[in-house]
Length: 126
Image (cartoon, rainbow, N blue to C red; front, side, top):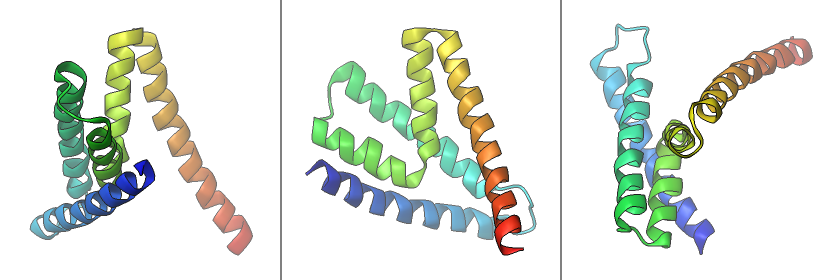
């Protein structure tokens, strides 16, 4: 059942990301900065902060609703929101060092992986 909730939520979140990112792109066509992605990531972080606060602090979300909204919808909308929320939780529960390590590893290794993927495609496919 959880897989179905994640899948349905992810479907809706992905559509929302496509629509919002596309709308922003149409509004600022001349910009080379990815404002659509920025808006999606920041709004996703705001949404996961609100929903996480409701779930953690007030117990207002059932486990199924939490899976559907936090993992499914927001995971499909932007995984950056999960990164932000998890980093916040690390800072709150474990201190600055684990949170900083998460930021450095996620961003650093992510950029290295993108670079490595490009290198591999050039080597293999020319």
